Image (cartoon, rainbow, N blue to C red; front, side, top):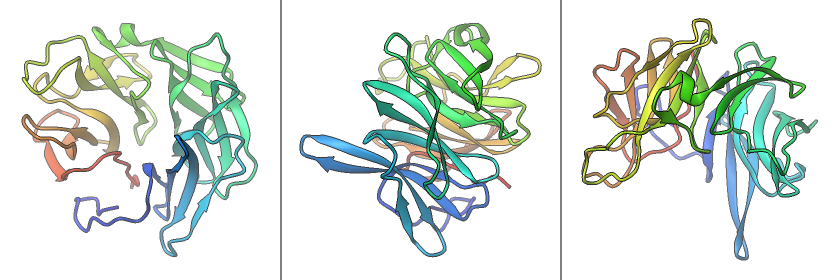
Length: 262
């Protein structure tokens, strides 16, 4: 964890994919434990004031990922693998009342990147072809083809989605079908786009020269994201206004940014 300006960085737990609660009092994250030749992954919640960690071992899966808090801080949305398919699951923040929100199927593509809408009554996710808005009963409320709203772009299973503080825009991590023009970079160019849910218009936030991924909203006018300067070996967390100017590195050699929104 660190202050919003990147200072006072400190380790609070062993794990990955941290998500700070809306009140800033807890962190949900993934535990990772080696079990023979495989790994066991559970959702856990750390209480910041006491350091107490609760691991949700009653969830019927040893492969749970990507926790995200409901706006009221009472529930956690995440992905879990059961019976060879990936589901979207819901659980109370104290580890009780688990249920499946959206059941996966053998003949369907996995729903990735779950994130709560600000209304607390729906969620967003993606399947590398479409971005979906789902009700809490799993019904599809809206969907958008990724290659239609973001020309020349696509998403992988790791492509992150975040919802703006006012709930009107999505911040989407996209792989662009462009030449990287950097000797230390192979593959597509990672970029961050903002998608307006009302106007259905998308705007690219990162330039072609600035690689950005795993973006989250810092406030209504700024974002945090991962990037790696040319020649560097590790990712760092950067802050940037949504006008795409004056990006600033906040934390060197870091991953998985998460923000307690004001």
